[in-house]
Length: 477
Image 1 (cartoon, one colour):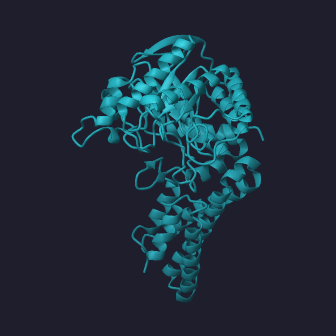
Image 2 (tube, one colour):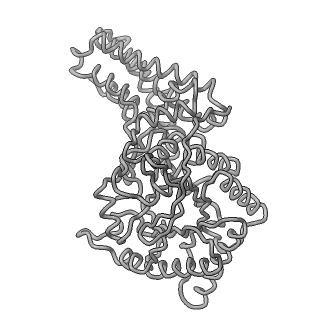
Image 3 (cartoon, helix red, strand yellow):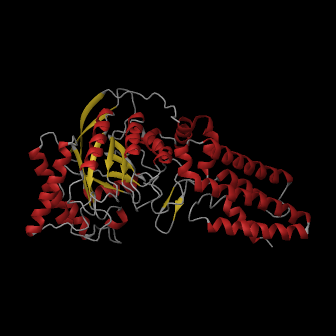
């Protein structure tokens, strides 16, 4: 099923824009348009099963439709990108890459080819010379396919030779520029790629970041992820502090909707809490391995990147779902609303899940049992029944590709909502003093809750809303 996409505005003027010494050829808005982030796109940078060729082709078309002008090829589990980076791509993989490059050109999207050599890269001696030659050969082969924009990443490795990494980057970029006069942009991600990892407790630059920032050419754009790997947002002050560490504007690698650290939960909310006023040279959104479902958040990211100052997350989110899901948009919005927030001990991002249900169940349990009026029972029951009906329609009518991506979560949500209905029945029995029915419902609810917890490894959502309601009811005396 092909979803109907809206007509997008044209961006007719092309200008050269300097960003901290980095010359970027970017699409600029016509007079009267809001100022967009110059370089904006998607980075396939997640761990786990990489996208297939058809998904990459589809995301390039998506980028064009949403005025995203760049795509970074950097799948962590592509062996020739990271673990076996020195080796040339096999012929069939090169053919796939060539097709992507052609599609990107047709879609007016920069295809940025990235390599992550940091696991075993040598900087000095004969080994260092060989690795420089291997990298130049790798990038030059991609140049022959039509690639003009490149990136070399040093994230998620143990090495902390900031000067060595920066010198390597400088050498590769200089040599590529000497060989190819039409070389485009060159990007990097340092090993200390979030601000809290760049500084000491008193705010000074750590030795790695100090050496890397001092040595790196101004012609290379640095991407960072914010205060943490997956922070809740980036404020104006936080971005200014990060820029100051490098003495240049930094681009943003935004880790939403990526969920490779919590694959059982889908990130289906909008992009939120990013800078509105400070000029940003670039932003890239890291998606989930679920390409179709990633488009909800990616569409909102595109709306932000086109006009940061006037971005409205809720409006962009509703518009994205309406455009992508047509007659199912209300059902999809109800489901997606309960799968926005991802959090563990080092990541916290996305809006709260299921606030409407949370508010209605909170009201029901407020001043229990006297505050549990029939009106509040009815409000909670109506919300749960609407959510259940939406789940049933989505299971029947979603396009197969999307349904396959979210099947575990839809099944889990139905379990949660069925348990929520049992919880409501248990509350009614408690309030009515029906001890026999109350005990039977309590046993049933506890069994449903155990089943939900057992299935969380496959599908997780609504932890602070639908699941929290079950837990609160079970905890009542």
